[in-house]
Image (tube, rainbow, N blue to C red; front, side, top):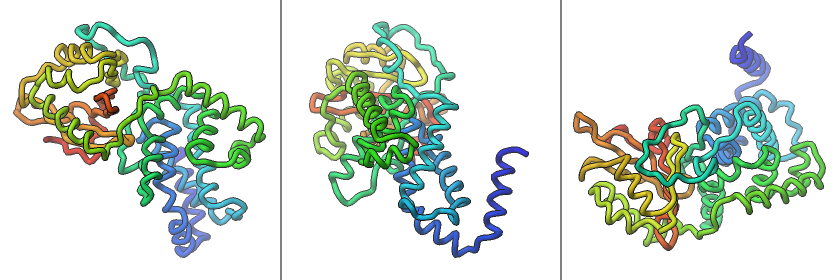
Length: 339
């Protein structure tokens, strides 16, 4: 019998011996954790689509097993256990999701045609509205942004799956080592060892330590307005002034990536030459960072989705742009199909 039919049959059997009040109790208690579980699965998997699927699977498994939940741990811990194990299985089956800058050296030939690698399961951005905590405490909001920033999630993808789990549960979610050991079925010493190795790997291969400016800073708003205007006006000189000298540009599904403001501008001129008014920028928010939906005018005069840009902004200007050409992401960010 196909897996989905078996799942439906098991769910129906469970529902038959359980009343609607049991379902309401489960939903009332479990639903408040849905958003944080989605953020957890996204950090683990690097794909917002996969994360949504795994959260749905987590809730289905939990719902079917709820009458056997004995309360020896909190419901939140129990849900995290189910979600984490589902993520580990998914990683084992699907592998990791890199960014171009994590695969090799940058290109110094921006005029050379780039070739897409659609067979690579690239990292995906995630909307702030989905993965950044909705908290009253400003410090909690900042911490949530930091733990979902694109460079951090990309760095996690280079860790072995068990080290990734340990680092997220210990350093992001602040679980005790004993709790993590219980979830993974291992010892506290093994958890501490894995955490040390994960931290060392991130220190070596993780994101640069340039301090990102918070998206709510007024200076960021002004820079973003000028950035959008430079694209829409096809003003290359203005664009050059906005990038840091050592800025990074990458654009999945193309494996090539580029370093240096002058190289990036040459790339844009060579690969994305546009006339004033041909491009439009619609603001968005992704991974705790400012973002734009970039639209390009087609032969019918309609501006249609072209790429989703996620920006890293420092005091020195635009430090990195990750431009995703997967236009199926636009609806997730509330971006329209034409601008």
